[in-house]
Image 1 (spheres, rainbow, N blue to C red):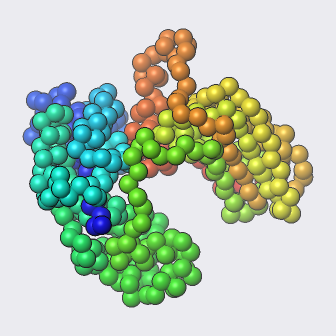
Image 2 (image 1 turned 90 degrees about the vertical axis):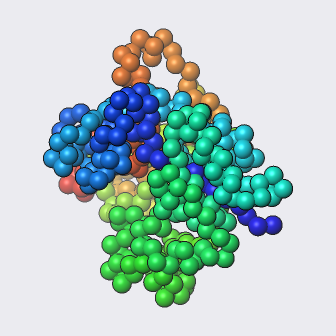
Image 3 (image 1 turned 90 degrees about the horizontal axis):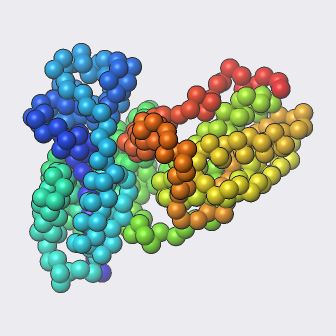
Length: 394
């Protein structure tokens, strides 16, 4: 049975959501982000993009390029509009996966009698979204998640792009390597140094060479260049519940600096909690692991009140680390695991309700920023790895 997969992306979602609350600014160069010159742009309207304004650009630079730029805060209706779109898509498609706040995968495989033509159903969906939410959207259609995601990126704004079965590799061949999801700012220069600038050039090297150079990542890059992707569309409600969330890191250089090791532990904790909250889960146990230079590995576990909050989890992790970090030997690995996972986050208590509104909304704002720009776009200061102290003694 031929796969029929689609990727729907809400165009300039943050700006469009803000314009629903400020319709008088439609047609003007508009950006969503902070207001101080030290802030960054979260999203820019297509009118603003004509001036070279883009996501993650400093506000001062954006203002220099477009003095008439209208700045708006991140709108409060983001979550409501995202959920409304998700529910609408489930009316049209039997399997809908919410990949992020503004991106959804749909699997129409086996629906040939209901939907004979991909373009017809795509047009019906985009029109329904525009009518019910007021949001523009783009759909990419193909036989797998990878290719339809790239197609949705290429079809913006407000487009519908179908890549016919068998033409996946030809569609990808002329594209720059940065269009392959996963080839980011770190990997792209490395590939260009190898003389690989376009997707077609990836295939000039055999898969064994890619495996030898980059392991599983190399195998993924080679298969992606051929338009091959085995990832399934899984409805959000059907995703298996995790037994635990683990994160660990092997240090570039063994260290006995408590401050350096705790900065790694803090970042690992932030990563684990980010995933916990994104999947609307909570945990009731914390485990910390450290491995010394002589490969002696120690772990300790603590039961905590069920939570998804960093304020509850990180202190427990630090306490466990302090009990483990007793030997006068350098450490080569730090790890963290959140266990006893269950669906549902923490129920707000009285003290949460009494907090100022901006503090109540802060966790959601951080999630939005990371969904847009990646996890490392915003970190606590204690999670920033300070290389100058990595080898200092305790």
